[in-house]
Length: 517
Image (cartoon, rainbow, N blue to C red; front, top):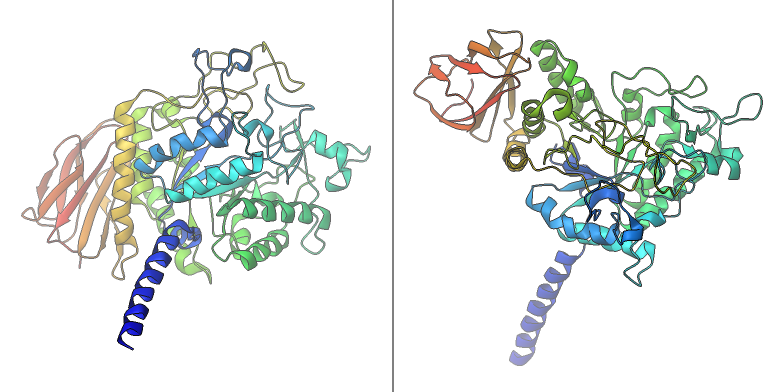
């Protein structure tokens, strides 16, 4: 009996040891939980350029010279870099097979799919015997090993090639021609139906896509121009996905500042309706931060964002969409200080951080070859179509990136701070307090919780401001203040800070032994 008991103890020890080891290698999706707690740090990538090997440094991938565009396998090489920078989620721009007719760019727009169940062969490596699908699965598995979640983009329209193959999926005019939404000449508008009559053909196309990407192992979807589909269309699709994975994340490309359909033929579903039917979050209006004139308006919006936790039956959140692939590069538009500010606002505000590949290292996305005659094309467009100041999504181009190490260091530092800040946000005693300042161009707030208080204030103008006062109730100059980010040392006194703020300068301090009443 004694030997048997010993055997049981040894067996139990080995069993739980093996279980523990296996558990470490089995990925369990937690994307929704983290998103709703504002803990995702999302990095947007174009797999076609993510780790492109432009060895001759001319900005374009020359396959005839042995250069390699970004793909699922060589992309694995950059995952450690992202993990070290604090990234815990990647948003991959569309990965499905593209159309080549009426295309934009020499590789074709990522948002002009010809299939929703076949991967883009451009993203496969020819240096392996693995199938394209196996390569995608391997990339996702390697991301998961590094605790990096993967969300993929769901395009809102179909390519002209798909329109020719499946006209039943599309809206047509009186002459039977497909509808060009906005100025997107390379795609045609899907006919998703109405609230009372969803087009099942389009729904099934999207349902097949959901099945396919879930089979690959992805953790969620960013729905491109989600406003262009009926609310009930999304409700049915999201509900379906949640039966397979309750943690499957849904983010809507939608915003309060968008209030018109992309075409007179298209439906328009506002962001709040999208949230009501199951989307976990949306873009918000952070992309309009560059145009904000009043610090008060900015603070009012942050308060509104914070109400998302209690406004809906299931809490909602937003992503810090200060810069996306659709927006002008912030450094090109407003300079390095502005870009640095949005890094830190992503970290400090009750939102999920979001940044585009290349911006943290100083790439301005200005391509010298843009919109010139191409030496070679893989579509019917023989020009290097590109948007100035925006990540290239149309050609086989270089890996995004610059050489601004100072900006990159700030990006990493802000990501690390966010992990501490989210502990404050999610504390039972969390408190957000707007601070009064002596300038309409200066915002200020405190974050308190878990016996910690962080003081934040910043200048949203392009002008330096002197002798700025930030009024902090209950603050004493004897309180132990630890600077996290400052350019000039503020003068502390009872109930206030006096400082000088450069354009787009943000100052952050941790205060010990201080808690707002």
